[in-house]
Image (cartoon, rainbow, N blue to C red; front, top):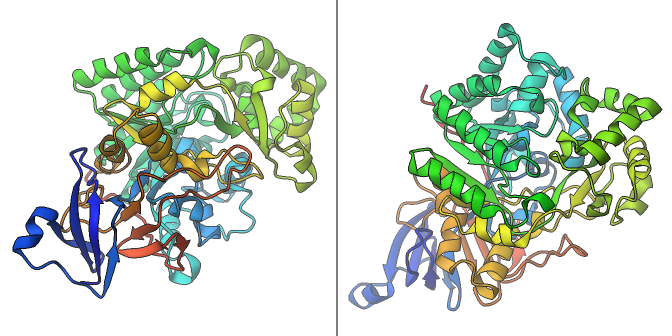
Length: 532
């Protein structure tokens, strides 16, 4: 064998009890598992390398169901932000906005729209236009060597709408809807695993339910799933969840709820109401899953808080409105008095808004500060040309804990890697689950938590040979110390790497070895084989 992992405590991803075993790896797959009780009766496997795993847990690699590494995987071959956490697969194309499918106009506009998530892309050769070309670019990244971890992709509905009809706030015409159907179908045919939406982001939020239902019918026909950032996580959150459940059931499409939580003061302690809603739908036969990150603050862009009408026409139109005193006053009223749809229908509380990153280095002094008021926010939006990223301190710990216990829960970092002071979830989500919520708080058992982070997302992605420690499965594996694993990232030092994860394998090759990043680029795209 190429590798034998000796005397590991195998937490196999099924949720069942762990067991002690030798695990042999050969040609990128798990070739043999010899449990401790069976070792006396047979020859223990041998290998060119034997790794003593005494005191370590061996689990499947973690699946980040909500990642924003769309350009990071191309610009940074190291990508330790995820590899060091034990993440072996990321799902990209989130929140309805990403870089394929596009034409030249749409690409320029989407680059501006999500500069705060991924940078402006000026350091990446954005030479693709289709989903298939983007996936090919990932596979051929870094001189053809590949990427740090595996990646799957969701067709972004907001980008598709932008491509088909620009930034107009109106229902699509039938020819425009046909074009969107074709774009979604082409993306799925080229390997996307489903479709995402950002329904508090423009232009995706302009789509009525009937339009979304039609696109979900296409997704369902190709065996994909729908992953919406729905219309509200604040006022009207339960209604927004119900809307997505009803819409996908009508379309016959599986539903995966993005960063599913209940935020802002109006939702303190209301997670049980959400879970009851989901249980009722699941018991009635709905196909639903969800992901969360184990932190209370959210992270987005400052411009995302603006009302949807203020964003019609795209980034330059937004800036023009911000510069106009009359329009800016109307924006302020929606933000501070009415409750903007971009801020989930809740009047903004500026003291909860912390600047985490800026596009213009000359504005670095603002990073780490709270926003004082609307005039300060307005100036920053104009000066930074909408590139500012923020943390919103609006979550509730009791909701976070309740939702992570649910039977269809999976893990997703929602990790935005841009900015001088990003959210610590980008570097810490998975070890934080294991260290804080398993070892310290006992919210989940180790076996339960690993299942949430491995086999459950693999099942949602319909991956037949990932997500479990099983013979013949692909050897995407993590070795961690249950007694010491912890997130190193904090709000003060968000880019600190985790502790207690000495080894990570992608496709049977060490990307983290003895706690250090190797030069291995074993990641490739995971493409859904369409079945229309």
